[in-house]
Length: 68
Image (cartoon, rainbow, N blue to C red; front, top):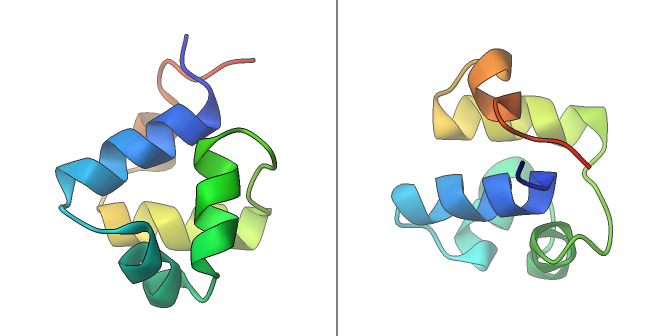
């Protein structure tokens, strides 16, 4: 099982985006993206919706194989 931060990083790298680019696309800071990827924090629901849209995946795909 992946952590949500691992999934965000995996999808971000697949899109060829930097943390800063992703943050700008969803209205978050680079530091927020970094914290999510390192599992320091988890994104709020509004950011998850934005991430799903940016990555072009469904919620099911986003949360596939994600657990604690």
